[in-house]
Each structure stands twice: as C-alpha cells, then as structure tokens.
Length: 349
Ligand code: ADP
Ligand code: MG
Image (cartoon, rainbow, N blue to C red; front, side, top):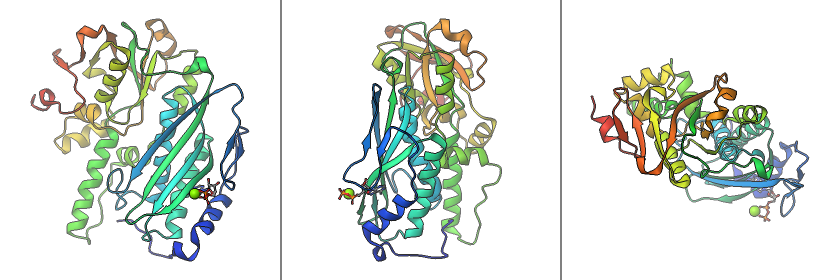
C-alpha cells in the first residue's frame, strides 16, 4: 500500500558484510554498560552488581505483521518496543538489544535502512544500545528476532507470581486500541486489494492506528513507581489481552481476581470504532492484545501513593483462589474469565 519505489539497491550487490558495516556505522553506544557492540565475535556488557534480565521475541512476516500496511520504519520501532515492554514488566530497565534478521531478496538495502531507522529511533527514545545481531538469507519473507537485555537491583525485580489476596489490580493507559486499529487496517487492505485505485481511508483513526503500528512501552510508569517507592507485588505486560494476562498472574500467584468491566480503561476512539465494526469494546480490551500496557498488582496500602497518577486505573482486586477469576459486568453479573472466546459477553446483546 505504501511502498517506496524510488530507488533500490540489491542486498546481493553489497553482501552480508557490507550490510553489517552499514548498520554498524549508524549505531553509537550510549550506555556505560555496553563495553563492546557490533564488530567482534560477541558483544561485551558490564553490569557490576545488578541482575541481568533477558527476553527474546520472534516476529515472522505474515504471522505477526503484514508489510502491506506496516511501514518498515514502524515495524522496526514496534519490534524493539515490544521487547522493552517485557523488560519493564520485570520492573527492570532495558539497556541493549541484539537483532537477528532473515531476509529474502525481495528486500533492498533501502528497505533495511528503513527498518533500522525505526529500530534505532526506539533505541534512542528508550536509551538502549543496539550491540549486535545476526543476518541470514530467507527463502521467503522477513523474520526479525530481537533479544533485549536489561538490568535491575535484585530486590526490585517483580514476577508474575507475587499477587496476594486483597491486592489491587492496576492497568496503565487504555486497552483494545491496537486490536481495533488492526481491524481498520485490514478493512482498508481488503478494499485496496479489490480495487487498487481506491486510496485507503484512514482518517479519524490516528490514535488506534498508532496503537497498532507504533506502540510504546510504559517506561515512564516504571520510573514513576520507583520514584513513589511503590513496588508492584506482581506484573505482566499486556501482549495478548487483559483476560489472558490476568489469568497468568492468578495462575502463577495461586489466587483469584475480580475485575470490574466499568473500570477497564477504553479510549473513546477505540470505543466508537469497535462499535462500527460491531465489536464489543470490552471484548476488544479483554481479548484484543498488542496494547503493551502494564498489568500489575499493589498492596492496598500503596493506593494513596499512586492515586493521583493519571495513567493508572484500578480495575479490580485479588481474591482467594477458590473464587476463581471473574469479570463483574456492567449489570453486576459475575462472568468467569477465559483467555479467549467470551461467549457470555458476545451473546449478551
Ligand atoms: P558471526 O559470523 O560470528 O556470526 P557476523 O559476521 O554475523 O559474525 O557478525 C559480525 C558482527 O556484526 C557481530 O558483532 C554481530 O553481532 C553484528 N551483526 C550481524 N548481523 C547484525 C544485524 N542484523 N544487526 C546488528 N548487528 C549485526
Ligand atoms: Mg552471524
């Protein structure tokens, strides 16, 4: 849909080493922990007395992204950010990434420049160093594998398994936007494929399109919680949807939860567009995914400290295990949470 056809340099004309050299020239190390970056057999990091937190994510074209509507620069940004989000979800700070790429000959040097401009923009925003990677050919399509490395003091780390009965369940930002944004993109793609002369109509959807194409991780929330001296009892980032993530926390922590539908934060644009697609906005928030917000639990005593923080909503509380994990809907009915499906909610209208 948005491909740039201006100039094209074949990767075969520059070779793997030429490409790596080009990438390496655009990278400057910022963190003192990054001792050696691209250019040797391995990167070298120095973390002194901190814990090292490592996470990896694999993104495959056609499975995790669609290049007909995902600009490569945004894709690079998103690929980095989703990894930073995993590091923040441990209450740690991302410091480095390594980038593995498998590329078919469909991709030109200019396309890889675009991808790296997004990756490096994310590194800039989150103060992370790109310290290495690997490059190989692929028979078809693009595969991006990113490994993120972060640090934290041992006592700061937050796991999924620390939630206790009576803790408050909190979520940052708002939910469902990325999923509804994807519905808009897929609708426009379908129209475009059927009639390439019709230009995509993406107006009025800026917020949800950005949520899908260029999400951000909740760096500032982690910093704020540290500043307020609030350590969550458990935490996870929302990549698969609220219901799946709360189920993970409850399973790992051996507890139940009550989540109130009317407390789930949903942006008005998400709400309106969901309605246009005949989707229940709550279901989008529960099952949509890719919001990269943080879901965490805090002790009740910490409530006063975070109350004034605008970007956090309290959506429920932790119960004992035997009560299960339930959604209290707007009419006060208790619905057992499931990772997907939502028959009870889907059939209520
Ligand atoms: P090796 O043969 O040991 O795998 P490479 O020639 O693949 O070494 O890599 C040389 C250097 O370039 C290493 O520092 C590696 O981390 C870096 N590198 C390779 N591919 C990429 C990439 N796609 N992005 C960033 N750095 C890369
Ligand atoms: Mg290699």
